[in-house]
Image 1: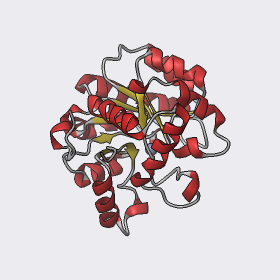
Image 2 (image 1 turned 90 degrees about the vertical axis):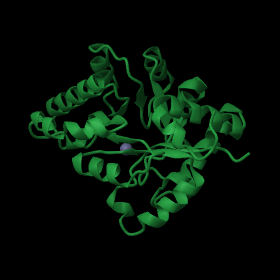
Image 3 (image 1 turned 45 degrees about the vertical axis):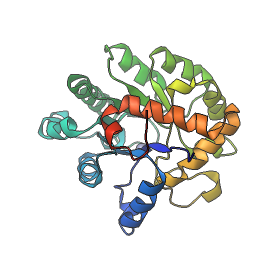
Image 4 (image 1 turned 180 degrees about the horizontal axis):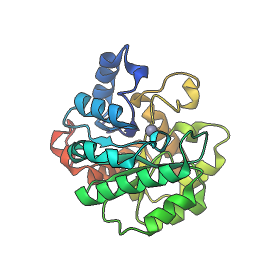
Length: 260
Ligand SMILES: [Zn+2]
């Protein structure tokens, strides 16, 4: 049986794919069962909604690096959030950010409220702002699935996220020599809370470091996970697909592989 791969976080609508998107999409659609298109601002969210097909969920959201200007502007775009399968990527990021922490917090909270109102899953982007993000979650009653994308902390933080019953998604940074902490984190995530992703065009696996990443390279993330967890590919891919479809059940009837 061919493993049923998914990519729980990609930006195929990014300019990096403008020259050859059709080719890339063809390749990706023939090797993956599904993948999540993730927006990072209004334009990229719209573009994802235009390009996706029915088996491919879309997250609409404004990334913390784009969280500037009046948050009330979001009212104008609320229809996009309604059309989406998830809200994201949203969150907080203190690394090299041009936006103000107060603005980031406002945009994060407002978009989280939209997700809760429309009952949509949430995709979290968080860099060096773990406690602040968890503080926000502690002030809301969260009754939608939450995915912590590109998890880049250690096992201590994993436990805090698991206490909330959130999903944890790992990228190919687990293949980088210096990522011992992240590998340790991956080792303790229960398989029913695990997702795998590329974050393409970013974060290429070690074997193509420095080049453009695309969702087909999620295979490298699966391989490394099998190695670290001592499990086989079929078992891992079945479980990860099950997690993905539990977050995005509306994609299920459209998946090309027979998923039970
Ligand atoms: Zn991303």
